[in-house]
Length: 222
Image 1 (cartoon, helix red, strand yellow):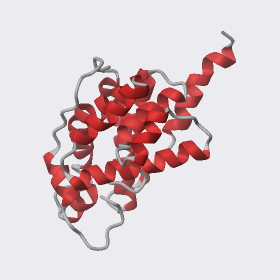
Image 2 (spheres, one colour):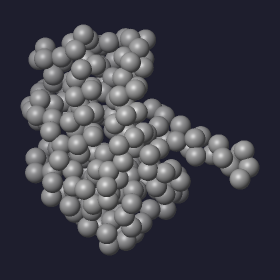
Image 3 (tube, one colour):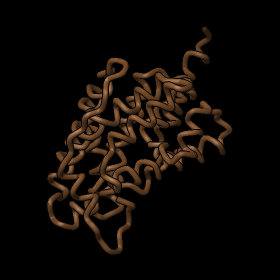
Image 4 (spheres, one colour):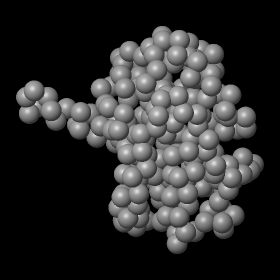
């Protein structure tokens, strides 16, 4: 393998992890908008909130949903989309997940990235949950599972911090400082490769309640 070919997975991972990539989650705050507005989180406790989201929501649920989407093809992929849908009983959470997935499907079409027909069928059926299609998308894009999980974990952490910046709760330099401090934990969580077929079981009650609360004048979808 040439040096150029050996660098391609890293370059590809950096592209797919970039905040400018149209993944569909830019409009999501995972409940942080309401939590900040209610005074339950501030700039001093923000890092703790993000870590709780990584451990409870991402590691417990999204990591497993993504790994299943990464590994499965054909009918098994379609079944995995349906399984994840059944594990999301809260309609607001379910709708947000599908909405983010739709944006990623649109990006794949625009970039001419060919997805499995089972993934397209899930999209048409309204079951195209983001974590599953993200896993499949990253697999088709040539990443290995470890890199895909790292991209996903970093994207969630950066997304939360970015939402806080846009909401005026923290500055851009402080965001990078906090993200750097969390980097070892993000890496450790992403390195935990789940066994095939393991079902998600996330637990993030504070953010679940926050993102379901009605609020006028929202900047973010959730």
